Image (cartoon, rainbow, N blue to C red; front, top):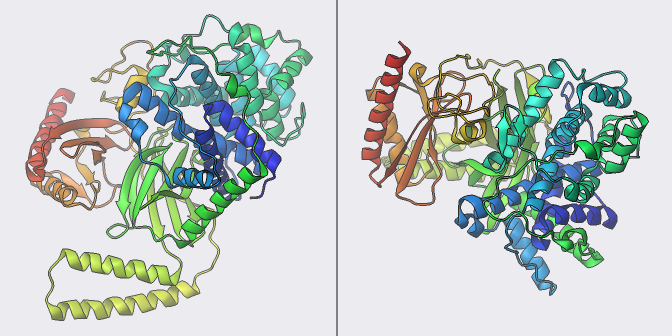
Length: 618
């Protein structure tokens, strides 16, 4: 993807406006460019998906909005949850930016500044644009009309008819509207969690004084309006979305429909800031530095270095991140694929190679809109510069949760042979073989490698970007039995531990299998270290002794997944059981290092809880 200095400067202005930090803006700029290139590949074949086609500039803009989420969450965690988050290891991208600019005598140091109400208002508007623009103009209309200006149904009908006379996306009072509004609400609550002051089902407490925020809102929307479009032109969905977001276009649109000034209905949520949220605005936010030709060249060189690193990379340990947060890891020496569950509001899954000098982005898959494809299973394959193929096998359940299996494959014959050899030596090192047996196994493996090389040469060089297949996967059966949700969903929806609503903040969703019905369990990998292997083997042994069935794969037969949560301390071990809907059915913590004892106590507690739930259900 090629862009000139004007586009890079506009992208930098957007990143700087959101973060008000030079170093973070530069990181977001390069990360956004990488995501835009990956998203362009996925956009090439999306027949039947409820998404609008975007230009290269628009994909760059969306990539920036998505990339900024990681840095936003890191800052919020450092201030509100865990101060150690501010000490996270640098990514490879951050290392390259620091080194490149330091070499040229330009220091870009991270700034530590507390979050203010102004920051959260900008992030709210940015996320509202991101979760709607990545789908279609109808979603943008619902989001702007209901989560920013609070228009009535008749006003929304007039707006919709003006920008979409054929009503391609449905009306504003039927199922399409209700589904869209509920989806946007869930994604906003999932993103901001306890920072939002909720007042009931689908509502939040609004800030009393919105007039002082009007200039900030207009500036933010001016940055967020889709690029590469003309004003008040409704020829396609990107132009429609631009008219709905751009403040000047939106005001003229409402005047044409004789709808009152939107500023009278401006509604900004009240954020539950633990510190003083009346901090003064930052004037430097609106005065970003200009990118010079030298700086632009440095950024483009960094993009080239990242591409070269992917071309030369021989990954051993992969990190899978869901919406910027690490979900799991898997070692390519012992595993070729890994399966897990993601919640309905998930937007993007990224796969990184954990290198010695930082993490390297290999692939990304956007889930927005894929669940609306007719088949309940979608396969997305991405090829990196080095020929590494990362495949996302996504199975959608009726409740909106998704089962995802990520697999890795080398297509370069030499690297494939090197990986096969490392896997063989790794597995042989784990067992003790007699010399004759080892020699026989070596001959067999060499023969298989030779056949595989011949097979690889016969394979086509091009891969389909999105392949749709009928699904053999059975979606989880809904049930009305109460159970605990995951901590994040429980906090956002106001659900207590017994599954009942703690107020008016609960919202209806289809539930997964309850704890009392769990019989088949998949034990996820806990890593390749000695403790992780011993803990997993101990859990499997104890589960088999308890008459519970241990499954080899998550899909389609496993009822639930036994996971180990990531913790900072080596002695703290957290285990949880999650069903296919992403709900946490059971969790327990241990502060010790004896893997066998932990496995014995954990399975004993789990069996007791299952039996207790069965007695309650009777």
